[in-house]
Image 1 (tube, rainbow, N blue to C red):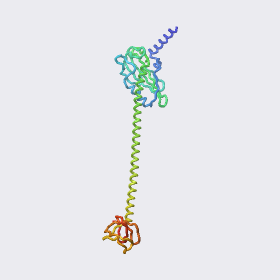
Image 2 (cartoon, helix red, strand yellow):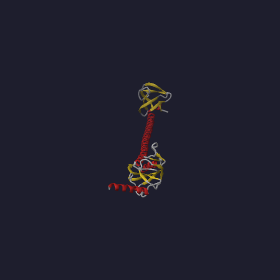
Image 3 (tube, rainbow, N blue to C red):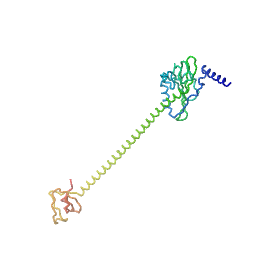
Length: 281
């Protein structure tokens, strides 16, 4: 009796597939995986899978383990309208003959793969993949043993990781570039600061040199032509130390109303009348 019930259940299921009733009521629950990504990256990876012209995880001939000729479509009557949440995409391959990994597949027909991208939470998505094969003549539906779904997801995952790696590389490159630019800007600012300080120091040196020059002009004189005597004391009857030639420069070290105590370039000191000395040119 239990065996009879099982056979009746199997026949009822086969009748449902053959009658083309609600196509979403096939036995497979679908292949579902959750992953982290941005929506843009997920959609880009999924689009690359849709456009790769391949149904992954199945084949027709042993010598050709890859089934090509697939196309992305907006919809297909092989699947009923999707009633759940998410974005739905389809890929089909026509004229496939008894493709592998579809239960009891036979004759010629069409493979259809449905992808449903669902937002699970911010930054996390859920991808559901369903694969079926429908015979062209009898319209009999065959579900996948999940090899197709898992293979399609593996390809999707590979594309997504490549996209994320490239995005990470680009972000790292930008950080390195920003860091290098920051260092360069810092160096430029340091050089500008150093240039400013150097200019200020040079201006200060120039001011100091100018002040020294002014001070030297205040304390230095030269002997008027045709020359004059260097006296031992500040009066004309004092003994002569030596005669200084015209334009000999002397340093004033003592100032009186009529006499200057001076020092000659060779270090001798004495006195000279103020009217016999003149400012340096």
